[in-house]
Image (cartoon, rainbow, N blue to C red; front, side, top):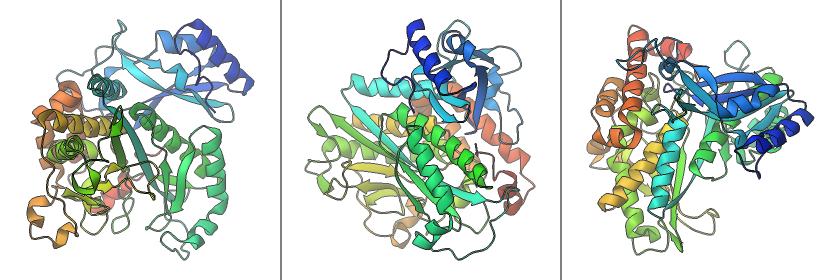
Length: 452
């Protein structure tokens, strides 16, 4: 439940209202979360009596929180070392009750003087949304959360018959799925749909479209709740891009729609499938930025193993109507699509910082509109069967995609050089840590790195 969804988020009166609602719900512990640049959710907890302090002055966190790594190492950079302090300031208006005695809310990184930290991914996304609004553009985003259920000790569940997208798979896990649905609804994160996925013991929860920051917040909360509910049913959850070598990968696809007053950019135009000229430029911008932002969308040590042709991971730099092998799948505004026309970026996986991935996607679209880029030719077949496949295949080598991110002027403009430097440092730490490991050893080592 949203405990403060309709009141002013600033000031002591709002804090008092939230405090009373939390107390009446039996909450004892409130955790505020940020997502670091390795895609891992980090948290600070407080007793309720400190709610005002969490909002106004924040809780202390070393700058190194941003360069924590999946193995809990620290990837210090020339600008991030052992000296300094940041403050995690709670967004009180987004607090939710999540479980018996526990509440959650997203937080932002601030400097000691109260200014926003340039390392804050959530703040960066909010800034890009503000830039869009200055151009009278209003984005909405949605996400799909794919995850794999595992045993309490991190292994595969006992072998049973599995039907991809099948009813028998839902029935086999019905107690978990019913509990999860009720828990998500109660917490105000109502899913659009829940279904069995292709891989064994793999499910997907699709979240409703929302403003970009709200979408990313809901994603973090949903992942928290999925983990809590799984534990109630004696299971664990992997959000790894590839929990097991040879198995199915988990995606974290992002959907984007853009509107101006009076119409959307992806519908009602003269282009293919009704795409407007600006909508075509937005798609062009997204595609033009793919190589720069692969290190954001799918930059972890395990990400490249998911991005294979035939896996519906979108491993080709192209777009197409309902083309699930294209990096950008276009969904037309039809009677079968009640949310309206939008684009889906398929390459994003759960190791990404969702706030940064959303910022990169939206920022790329805005760059395309600003530059009036043309809409590239549509690929209406499996890209792997196209004569131009070699030119479209996205690079999956971590070292190459990190070099592209490091040298990208586009990434510096959209995300800021501080974030780019830190992301590259974190991912290179992963490469060094696991350079002598086999693919199977890497998959096992990071299977639960992005779980909550």
